[in-house]
Image (cartoon, rainbow, N blue to C red; front, side, top):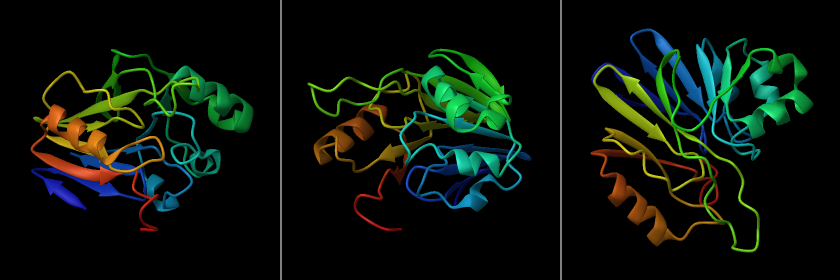
Amino acid sequence: PITVGVMRITKFGHSCVRVEHEGATVVLDPGMFADPHALDGVDAVLITHEHPDHYQPELLRGSDAPVFTIDAVAARIREDAPDVAERTTVVEPGQQLVAGLPVRVVGELHAVIHPEMPRFFNSGYVITCGGQRVYHPGDALTPPGEHVDVLLAPVCAPWMKASEAVDFAREVKAPRNLAIHDRVYSEF
């Protein structure tokens, strides 16, 4: 875990991250590589997109927390886990909401996998913890459009070159970075 001021960030595998601040807990992207305990006692779950390494309906069923996500994921939840759909809220790029902590929705498209393939929808989230901001971009290289204190930086993917990861982190200019989306390189 990383503790910044009174904010605590714990990675629970691949892209699944738990952010805690002043008694509120938010989990982002509990997918197939995530530790199921990430959702213990959580106030809200945020999901960036529908790929299984970011979204697993079985993990969502292990919690009664509200789920906030884009329409494409909400549609999958209605199919895969109708019992979870009733506590799912659809969010849109630019929207601000309170999901346990203040959140702003960023961007709307997954990074390019290949020019001949259609792009998936993907929205990242900027979470505010007091005076600190944490940005989880999902599988996008869309800058947050504001200063963030911690970038949860995707570091490897079949769709990513190492130079893109470095350039993205440089563009965001967060003083702290936590590597996510790293299962391609490591089991841990």
